[in-house]
Amino acid sequence: MAKREVDIVVLSDIHLGTYGCHATELLRYLKSIKPKAVVLNGDIIDVWQFSKRYWPATHMMVVKHLIGLIAKDTPVYYIPGNHDEMLRRFKGFQLGSLKITNKLSLKIDNSRVWIFHGDVFDVVMQHSRWLAKLGAIGYDMLILINSFVNYISRKMGRGNISLSKKVKNSVKGAVKFINNFEDTVCDIAAENSYDYVICGHIHHPEIKDVNTRHGHITYMNSGDWIENLTALEYSDSKWSIYNYNEDLVAQAIDINKKKQGKESAKAMMASLMLELNMKPNKGSELNTEEENLGAAIEAA
Image 1 (cartoon, one colour):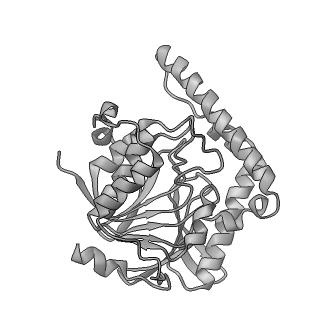
Image 2: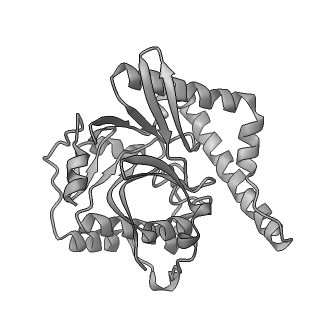
């Protein structure tokens, strides 16, 4: 199957290691495209709720697919979020084409793009971390219940429903939080002379033009792989929201889980280093002030 070429793919809020993660669907999507650069914008592996008892084959297959991209020298930027915040201490770490940074500033086709996860603007995250973690557990339980409800719904010949979306859309506080989040992000991005700002965190895919007191800005959010199954794509000098539920080509890809055997963390790291055939470059500090990704895309 010929893969669809994409200049840049932005993924966030995958939450590998949780029951709500749609790893199979994500893997089908990744296998359907040939990206020239990938941005992992936070909450890729859910360390908050990670359990050794739950790590399905498809979750490991997603990790291995990303490792394969790195082995092929595809630029992969990892921006940790609040659920994988432990990786923030490795800011500046570089392993082949993989770079870890807390935020990313890119120059794409003469436009300035600012990318970060977005939890820094979450008041609950900043002042009541225990409450945020409790909320994450409740959200995961809601997703579990939703999976069971959708199973019954499909058996009855009906379509899927999203309980979490219904809850968020019916709670005025949740809608207000999303609006305040977007307004704050856009205001700060425009003040710093960016043309585009990209976030994750709130699981709400969006592309919209916003006028702020500091000027015009385009706000984008990549959504998630828990309920929306979305990503941001940049191709032909244009940003768009990818929606797996509308992609019949990706949905038709067969995923052979039997090929994925059990592998320990030590064995996985050994195979990673063998596949990359290189040593980690810890001494190289990533320059995120302005990476000209446009030039890299043209050269690819």
